[in-house]
Every structure is written in structure tokens, then in C-alpha cells.
Length: 79
Image (cartoon, rainbow, N blue to C red):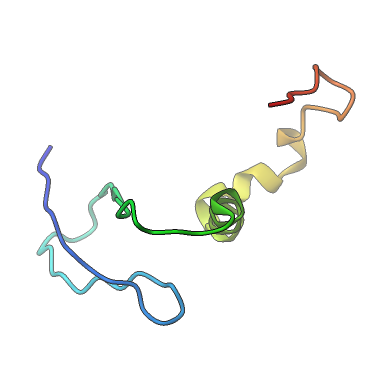
């Protein structure tokens, strides 16, 4: 596996823009995003949840056959 580091910035809306030609067509890639430690958000979990709910890669979780648990299953997880 080959790694390429590309430094980028987010725009005013918080979207990541990458303008980098890979010269590879129709191939799978993996993207690793590292955010500087000084990045501060009041609710990182909310940010993550919003990102996941809008990502089409997780659309299969909305299918009825994926809904295998009930609210009465398991034990409460209290931190």
C-alpha cells in the first residue's frame, strides 16, 4: 500500500476540498483524515454523527433487516 500526504484546509462551510490528481482511474482508495489537536469543537460526537448520517456508505444501516436490536436489549451504558 502506498501513502500520499496532502495538506489541505476546510472552506468556510467546514467542507474539505482536495484538488490532487492521482492519475488512477476506477480504483479504490482509503482516506485518513488527521485533525490538528488545537481543533476545538463543543460536541465532537455530534459532528461525527452528522457526518455518518449524511455519508451514503452507511445507507445500508437504514434497511429494516439491519434493525436487529430493541431498546429493551442489553444493559445501560453509563459513563
